[in-house]
Image (cartoon, rainbow, N blue to C red; front, side, top):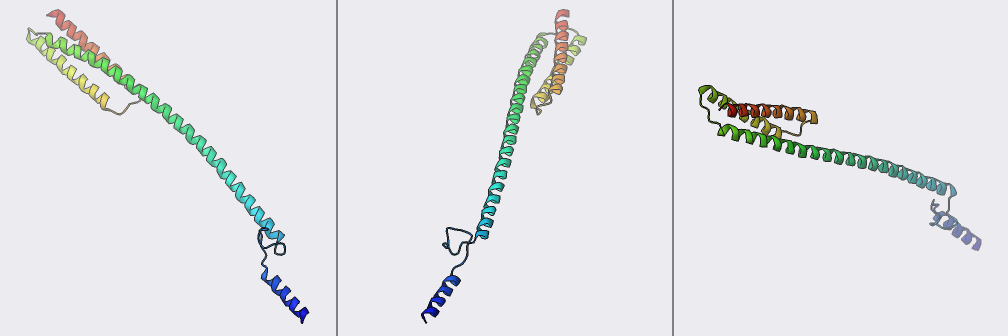
Length: 170
């Protein structure tokens, strides 16, 4: 009977021990080398995947940093263009203000000179309207702005010459 008892206890002991892939659990008798190797390989695969993800995120971070610096540089360039636009328009506005003062001082003595003065006043108003549109518009491409500014500057110069001629003929 004692052999039978030992056999039963041994059978219960062996049946009660489950195998595991973790050598820290289950003790010496339940260690399964193949399951442990599979578990180890799974962990290596997970580590490799995490390292690939880390590398991809590092690459994306570098790309985003580059995009950010490019956008900041573009913003700075646009800010410089806006400052130049403001400076140019202020200069043009001063010319127009001077032209208005000159035309206002001028006293037309004949009907032809009066018509010429009225035409100059209308041209001044038209140029002011165009300047306001240029100021209110979204930032145009640099070449478009330069062309528009040059056109307005020529018109103001022409009007200044006409005003000077009107003053001289008075």
